[in-house]
Image (tube, rainbow over all chains, first blue to last red; front, side, top):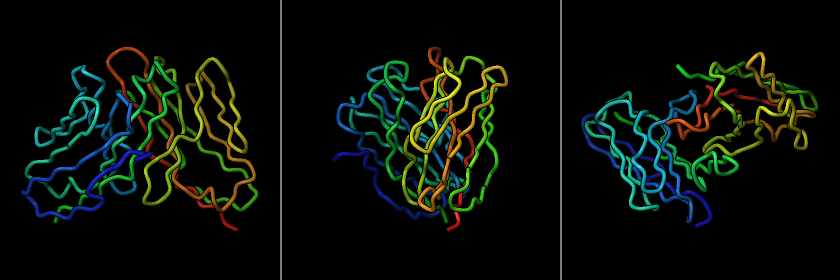
Length: 117
Length: 114
C-alpha cells in the first residue's frame, strides 16, 4: 500500500488479556516508531527501530510492553496482562531513515484503538 | 527532562481570522521543529517544519516563527478556514545523541467557526 498500515483498527479486550498490534510501514522506510495517544493527550513515544541497530526502548512504560520488527518490514507491539490505563490509540510511523539524514518527516498510520474493559 | 510545552489547549477562531499556537522547549540541543496536523480518526501528518538557522518559514497560509533566544516557536494560520479545524502538535527532535524520535507537545484543538 501507499501508506503505513495498522491492524486491527479497533480492539476491545478484557483486563489481564494479552494483545498484539501490527504495523506495516511504507516500503523502503528503514525507521519505524510506535507512539501512544491517550484521549485528549499528546503523542507519547514508546519505541524506535532503525535498520539493524538495537531498538530504542526508552519510552516503553513497563515490562508488559514489548515490540519486535522483522528486518525493515512489519512490526508488532505486544501488551501483556492489559490494564485499563493501557486504553489508548497506538500509532505507528515510519520514515526514510534516521532523522538527521532526511527531512525528518514521519508518516503515521491511522492507529489501533485499544479499549481495555 | 526534555519537554515541549504547547498552548493553548484549545482555540476557537472565526473564519478568516488568525490562529496562533505557541510552543516552548527546554533543551537547546533541539534543532528541528515540525508541526503536525491531525484530523479525527487519522494519524498526524507533517504540516510545516523549521530549523533554528532561520527565524521564520512560510508555506501558503501557514507560518512558523522561531525565537531561538527565548526557546519558543509558534504556528500562525492566516485566513483560517473551517477545513483547518483539527488538532495541531508541535514537536522537536534532537539530532545526534541517543534520541531518534520526536518529542510532541500535548496538542491544540483548533475549531474554525464559519
